[in-house]
Length: 225
Image (cartoon, rainbow, N blue to C red; front, side, top):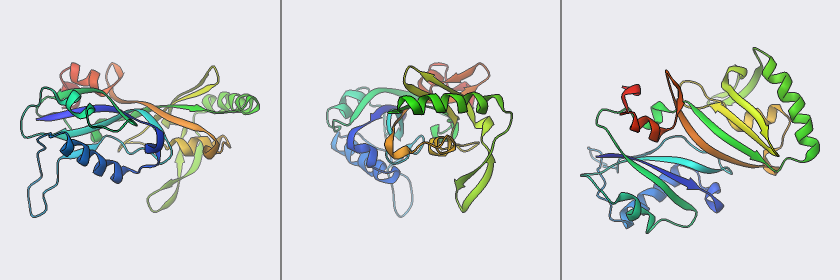
């Protein structure tokens, strides 16, 4: 049985990397007594994956874990919540219909909230945003595997605006197109070390627009088959 689990990653866990987070989840699920399914072969591993790596230093209100169990576990959410550390809050679990694509391959966009900008910085960035959003193309050297690559980042920014003192961003992520939030903030000459950045949601893209993973399952998972 496959499940998608939504959880927050806050506090000191923002310094825990992708692979370490997977190992932490394996320990949590074993402690909870979840009957995990394992891969075949000489070195079986639990069938776990995270929807999208979260950069070190960022918190998140919407991380997603995909896991497979040997059989249906009707009380999975309270079972996990009873043993999860305080910096992980499980906000939902859904059973995934058979044949649904992996969540990692479905994610296309992510929402971010950027805080701790000073008044002068907000004014400066607001002016830069207006100019940036008016352009059709913005070429920028960004970090990729193998080094720097010149990329048109403008199509990768779906939304960018201020909500009170908070900068809200919706950026392309995933295997099809990806823009690291750090690369966009560097374009605006912002030091990420002085900012508080949170990833607030992940989205799939369907004909009707953007939907969350749980909304996708509520639709029957048909959009990604």
